[in-house]
Length: 351
Image (cartoon, rainbow, N blue to C red; front, side, top):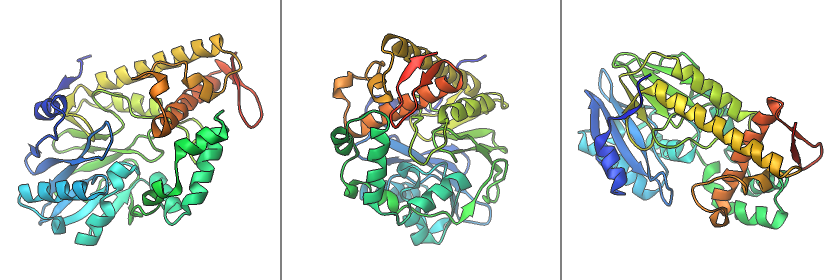
């Protein structure tokens, strides 16, 4: 199996320099446009613009909704001789704000349709107009159910005004199912359902050029966050690993265009690396359960290896770490490797 190789050299160089990469035409009529994400280690999302037969553009993902992001997107379109009013349709890989956030503003400026997988589209509808106080209460209760004390959970989740923007995201106009071809005239963008990062995550196989838009499902450097949440599926990591295996068995694309970091080749090799990473992580967690029997997911997260010392984790970073730990525990439990106690807060021991 050929190992993955960096092909987005300008993107990679910009990453190392901690700069925004350039707008690039990666195939005739297909451009990557970086849109910055405020105060986030991922730095930017790559929106991809497609020149459509008959005129106009199609977008895959849009970016985080803020003025700097809007300026980057519109300036990027100007640099390729286009305008936001030229956009005819927006495909959204998944519901996260750095991908969906600007879609509503694009639709308002152009009249474009927005399409997502129905699993994520339904989640956006459920979020839309929901009371932020109720959403915060639900998230706090979920973290308490993972072993957090209430005061820490309240502090980490934050005030309702932090959540308001997530309840104003654009509700999609269209649903796109696995195997369907998107309405981008001149292209053959076939949807590939890859649940895990979100229930309705989509990749896109562009069958004419052989490029594969991997969204957040397969990234060249890191594994996407796979977390549990109050309204989410029961075993998201099992979903993710299954989708990784399926993607790894597809014909090798000419190039992978992820939503973050840089373009690369070697999709099968990268999916194998990601699966191995999670198996190693599951092994580390099982060792932690054996060493600290009767621990909650919140407790066990502190005994795992992270990118920085656990004492530096707080607020959103800690929430993601704990809910990711919970996702790994659920998979271990479904495999029969650990057993959780019944009750409002599970405590795990090795089977």
